Amino acid sequence: MPLSTSDRSLVEPVIRRMNALRPLSAEARASLEYAMLDGLQRAGASEDLISEGDPVDSVRVVLSGWLCRYKTLEDGRRQIVNFIFPGESCDSHAFLLPVMDHSIATMTPVVYAEIKRARFESLTRGDRSLAEALWCETLVNNAVQREWAINLGRRTALERVAHLFCEIFERLRPVGLVDGNSCVMPVTQMDLADATGLSVVHLNRTVQELRASGLIVLRDRTLTVNDPDALKAAALFSPSYLQLYRFS
Amino acid sequence: MPLSTSDRSLVEPVIRRMNALRPLSAEARASLEYAMLDGLQRAGASEDLISEGDPVDSVRVVLSGWLCRYKTLEDGRRQIVNFIFPGESCDSHAFLLPVMDHSIATMTPVVYAEIKRARFESLTRGDRSLAEALWCETLVNNAVQREWAINLGRRTALERVAHLFCEIFERLRPVGLVDGNSCVMPVTQMDLADATGLSVVHLNRTVQELRASGLIVLRDRTLTVNDPDALKAAALFSPSYLQLYRFS
DNA sequence: GTCGCGGCATAACCTAGGTTAAGTTAGTCG
DNA sequence: CGACTAACTTAACCTAGGTTATGCCGCGAC
Image (cartoon, rainbow over all chains, first blue to last red; front, side, top):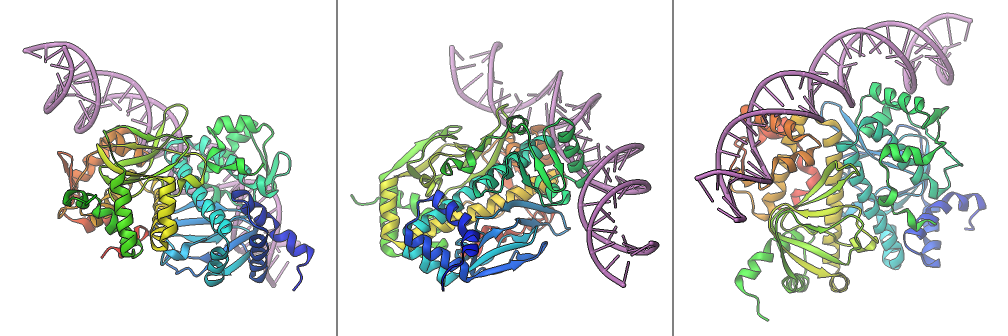
């Protein structure tokens, strides 16, 4: 089965990202490509791909669209604990644990590749570099999670929202989704509130404040940051935890 | 070099914990034991073992005492993002990334085993079960980090502190550090405040409130929970994210 | 002994952010 | 076209939690 050009361009960001985390052998690259194209899936916006308590038996790699990991309390309070962007994988190795401790939902329509556990294991067993790239991804994920902890625990509302915008920018950039000073922001203010631990009303107030101070323009689902350094300063943002040096 | 009984009892909780995460082969157990006893170290309270930005070239396994992972903002605001308890390891595989994204400090005097990267890699290369146990630990860690996110973002002060106490209890239990309804609580209220994202004053108020309602007794560095179910209910605590089923 | 200090406790006051409510806009479904 | 809904906005009000300050206790240094 020959690969079409359009299919290749779909999975290319994933290969590029993995390769930046750990240089992949040509064979690893090819077999990962095939595995992904074998399991292409689509989902609409606001769908749960997997829920807390579900057993895991496959790995999903996001090709386009935004997803989030979230947890809820009994009474409905919801916290988005992380976003998942194109080029990132969802549950790499998660099947080492019996069930999910959190849920994963789409925030936009999404294209992803689903790789079954057995195939995934033969992929990673066959090539050390791929396995290491995936583990690096898990470690970076862990670092992001820690940054979210200090974000939620110690930053003010303004710093928090600014920090989230900075992080989104820096995570979208290596997969080619930042265009100059702009990127898409295809999520509702409700989602942003759940990600920053704020109420929707206060999230809106904070966005207005960022707008008024000229730090951001957010209109038509597009975020523009004219002076990134100023936004970073307002956010107390330092990108080292994202391990971006790997993407030159 | 024969192992003394006292040395064995020191590393026993680690072996037991790893074995619960993944059943270890007899050889894995023995070589891990030797590697740990080879690198025994001590540290006093309130010492940084490693700081944000430092390169990592060894793995530390905690044998006794409490540590924490923390991050700070430029202006000194500090967030403890996780605790590290006896039987847990610090930086397993962290050397896959170039530098630490956070710091690790002792909260009490600590005994730990330091295993150099090369030796660690030969240990895990030699035995798949040990490697898997350590990766499981990383995944559980990640799950704990997510729970901390919802704790900081969505729980009230009372729920947060109660939740932290519940988690500490459940993490200390499998390594034999819970005695009936009590465990040691060798940290200052300042530390608890930094872990829950509260000010010291409000942490103190909250502890008073938990005391007044009869949910906890905290005295002489000892925490007693007479009615664990009541505390769990107040905390909206559900232990599944800790993967404790593994420890019977 | 007492000086100094770190940890705990409590009170008075204040503010960041939550809550409730209402209005606007824009898109979708008949 | 109008009805309905989801997302956003703004205002008024309120409270959880922060800040500042003061006092107490216990302990180690001298």
